[in-house]
Image (cartoon, rainbow over all chains, first blue to last red; front, side):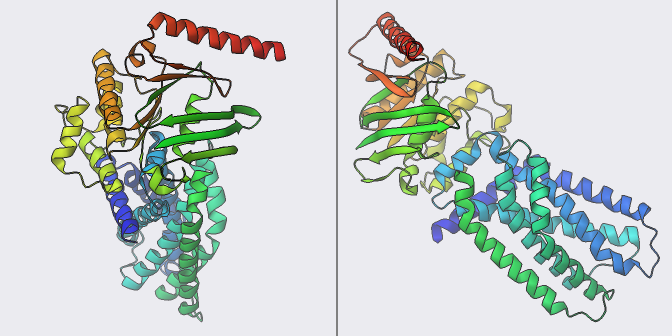
Length: 224
Length: 242
């Protein structure tokens, strides 16, 4: 376990240092997110009444689409110079590679949420500064990163990775999407008569199950 | 210690690349795999390294009595393939430190700088690797492969991109590692360089070891002639079978 945690820590440090130098992932994610928010702002005629209803959907859809760009890039850097093979030779337990990538992708998503929430609040004149709202987005980002990291590790080995990743990933994200949007809706008061706990339970169970399953199958995915 | 490949076969779709190949390499040997393009040299190196499994046959590390795919055995291999396994946005030192931390080899900064010096990068500017030339990247790749003091060195075309000085440096490093009893298997087309250090030449043709030549002071011309005759005889035989 100590060696596993050590590998995870070293891999996350490397990923963050790489990203700090290149800014490949964050730049593309942020640019996409900001542009999407602008487009939604102009495309949807929102009255003050229906803003609360639509806010969770807009914020989460923007995060999911922007996150897909990041997921693709996170494994391309490993594939380009054959670094994946270097990692396979060096890491004793290959599931550490998966968990490190999951953490890096999760950090990117959380960072994205930190920037998207104030931009949305300014553009749509509706405050989303709410710790519970941010917490639900973070839980959603965990489930998204858990499933997305596994699928990206498969699709990066194909020529059509840009197309395959969303096609394979989005159906798997249905429970996350529903739970995040409904929970956030309850928090903003736009969804009445629903119990937030059931949605949060669904989100937590999804996150834990997908993470555990991915850790178990990751070695077979990258070696076969 | 010895590495044994027993009757290993590997195919990609219908194309059989390794065909019941048997090979033994002992510690202290520098075995050079020669063969024309497409003979299966890279596939053999990848299979021996554990990166891919053979379709049939066995890989055996005699001293350990374990499958070659076990993680700890995999970490005892210094591997060079066509791609450098380097991170373009990190400097040479950061790349080495990253792999050193992953291997938990406990090397100090000074030791990593000594290793960079051994491959001729001691005075290289601390810039990201993407600014390096092909030869400099190859030197760093060699340093990366030697990082954790591996017992087995599997080098696929290690002279690629190196200048004359670099090839000499690589020969010197291989001789040093060989003198420490390491098991070394490499592939190359640079007969003039490898002739100076190899203890044996195995000629791989159509997925099999077609011939094995001990390097008892063999001249470059004789080696080239022998290689050509083995390859052309193999091609002729296959034509007749077809």
